Amino acid sequence: MEKIDWDILGFNVVETKSMFKATCKQGETWQAGALVPYGTIELSPAAGVLNYGQGCFEGTKAFRTANNRVVLFRIDLNAKRMAVSTKRLCIPEMNKTFFINAVKETVLDNIDYVPPYNKGTLYVRPIVWGTAPAIGVKPVEEYTFMVFVSPVGPYFKGGVRPLHLKINKDYHRAAPKGIGNIKAIGNYSASLYPLTKAKSEGYDEVLYLDAKDDTFLEEVGTANLFLIKDKKLMTPQLGGSILAGVTRDSVLKIAKDKLGLDIIETDITLNELYNSDEAFCTGTAVSVSPVGSITDDDGVHSLSDGNIGPYTMKLKELLVGIQREDIDDDFGWLFPIE
Image (cartoon, rainbow, N blue to C red; front, side, top):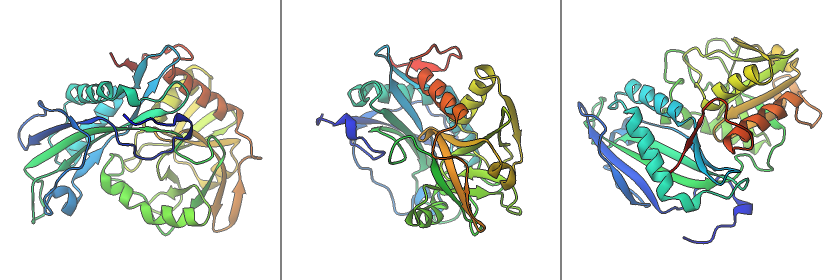
């Protein structure tokens, strides 16, 4: 293992020791697999994933905690969501126990790559795709599942700071009754052009509106969105186009049980966002990240004076505190790697 400078970690791929690999055919179940050396893979040019995007993935993290343990956070929810995603894309439905064991085995074998306490995390990427070749549009006959890991630092450059988002009504992330509510690989490729354009203009991310008439908030490109108004925590309701984020669910529970906020999952307009007391986005990669401004066709709408709102800060402290065992895990969310 090459020496890693933990103090300068970005959100980039770092080659590690090993990765988990398994294959499964249509009509069979996921039940075999093994660790293999980290490295490149080979695919047929006619592979289902390359031609028709038949693939999905998950994202989670392993944390080195204040108790010098390595833990996973709510991996059971990732397993549940992977089962939903594979079924929706006609991939053999992922067995939840198989999924969790594969992730644990991969993290354990790469334990030396988990950054020290408070120096970063080990990002874990389980991914499954159609391997067998196909010319016609159909589910292919064989699939590959892999888990690889990489030590990472903050997702956004500059650490915790208010983000600057842009609304681009020329593009939508997803539509109801589509696949926006699962982690399909195609969802993210569709966001790359508007994201690249926004970043070239100095913004951090794109805020998408609903595909029907651009009235209600949906998601930030890589995260769920929240706002706080008069001790009410509001977030767009899950309606078929929004991903049920693990961090989203965790923040909702922490806000209700630890901070006593009223929880409202509903349709939210831009005016409600602009008149909120605080706004932030959540995700495995971004954790809890405050929103500082939104730019739309009418100009810039500032949501903070450059500071992080008190509820946003407290929610982040509680979430990260549980993940790193700085505070007690009253919810039973941690899965130790042993």
